[in-house]
Amino acid sequence: MKKYISLFKCAVQETMIYRWNFFFGILSKFAVTIVMFYIWRIMFKSNQIIAGYTWESMKVYLFVSFLCTSTISWNAEMSMSKKVIQGNIIADLIKPVNLRTVTLVQAIGNSFFSNLCAIGIMFYFAIFIFKVSLPTDFQIWISFLISIGLSFLLNFILSYIFSLFSFWTSNAYGIATARSTISNFFSGALVPLELFPPLLARIAFLLPFKGIVYIPTSIFIGTLSGSEIYHALMGQTIWLMVLWGISSLLWKQAVQQVTINGG
Image (tube, rainbow, N blue to C red; front, side, top):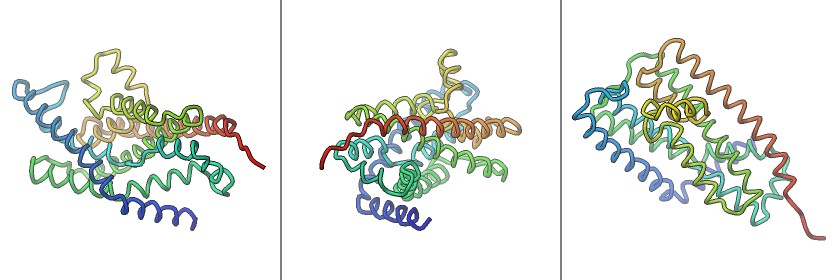
């Protein structure tokens, strides 16, 4: 346990050294949120309700979506590819630790301050600038916190799975871009899933990406309630276990691609 705590501290320190990187990363995501805010405001001037959303609920959706997409700032694909290309992955393989667990701890450490910044920015602008109404039901807050924790883990394991493809290709940027694009689209980070064409909506609701943004956001704004929240949380948990198992199988195949030369 001590070794993982040390890894967490190192990851936090690394983030502080390169603090401008994560600061501008958060700032760029928030800029996109502000742009979407004004686009939606123009659309709601001529429509009081769009796909079941009022302007008030859409404002909340946008800011909570920003929070969900900011929970993990660590880029697994680029980091893993660098290790594979430079041969440093060998050092990780011989260490008496689980690489996936190490990667998760590093992700938590690297995301620690970005989470604090995202929470601070979201609540300041949402409450004091754009006058967003927050839920008063304690159970909604508890369900939301559980859901956003599962959202972080889903985001991590999907990033980790995509990072393992670095064992087959050196194009880490392409892998990271593909994962980010697919995740943002099908998670509801760009627009709520209810606004998708029927076929795309059915596909999106079947995939695990909805657990990253759509589910925690829907819980927060009250789109889901009662047993629906329970089923949504169960869905996030089941997908997390399935993806965890897939990552284990993929890892066994990935390490077979490693060749050690020397004498």
